[in-house]
Amino acid sequence: MVAVVAQENVVALVSRTGRELQRYRKGRRQVVGCIPYRFKIGQKTSLDVSDELEVLVISSQKGKGMLFPKGGWELDESKKEAALRETMEEAGVRGIVGGKLGKWSFKSKTHDTFYEGYMFPLLVEEQLEFWPEQNVRQRVWMSVTEARDVCQHWWMKEALDRLVNRLAGQKVGRDNKQVLGSMNCTRDAKSDL
Image (tube, rainbow, N blue to C red):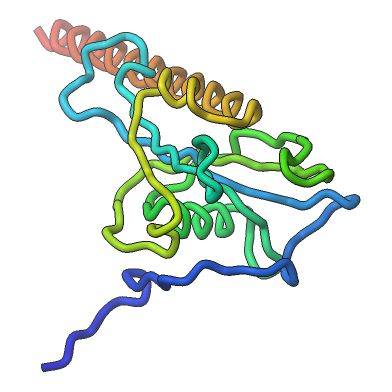
């Protein structure tokens, strides 16, 4: 028996390594990452989107704190492709990448160099059982408040705040459309009388 597997369902169990393909801009290494998120099932009663949201954080490779998946943006990929790759390699999740949350300049905690970091939201659609860095990282789903408390990078906390604000704005827009839609239905129904 032969099984055919679609290429998009195949995951390399080895992370990219090395700096040969790394992007640099004005001497600053370019890094990209994602904030993987999902909505709690059956908890749509709150007015605060952060109460409905869970985010996925990972341990640093050195085991000193938690953060969101991120890594080098390489020459042969777009920012979003790099963010997806890093998130799959480090956290073992895949999903839909949203628009950029922002760009931050920061100094490395371990090296005496500056970086430029780009963060994207990732609505998680799939959590893999096996992924490249599963033996060197822990992954934990937690609330926004918990993630803000444990995340070791100020710029990632700021990206998390931007994600929550963006999702809250989208929720307000959806709620307004629903209210307006129901008002239109009522008006249309009365006009038919």
